[in-house]
Length: 97
Image 1 (cartoon, one colour):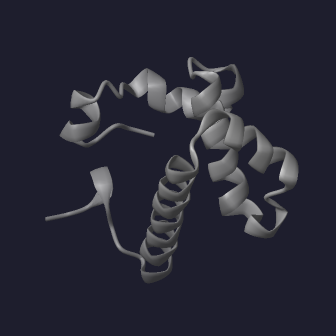
Image 2 (tube, rainbow, N blue to C red):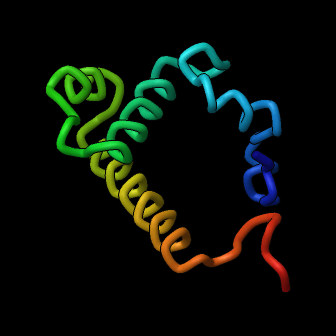
């Protein structure tokens, strides 16, 4: 996986950080970030299985407004990823201009 976008690099996203996402539970992420990543994984895998335990953990780390925004952004990116895949759209380092 590669960091290809200048905005991400300006915000401090490095190749090492991107690689650490594969095992984020042991990676250099805060407890808050790990909770958000667990939520993202579950929302992607099966949103019907986002259970009370996960939701309660999220509520200890995020405000209701932050949870709404996090959920919205995750849903947008999950949907976009599915559209890109289904339509076979080239992106990132694989795109040809």
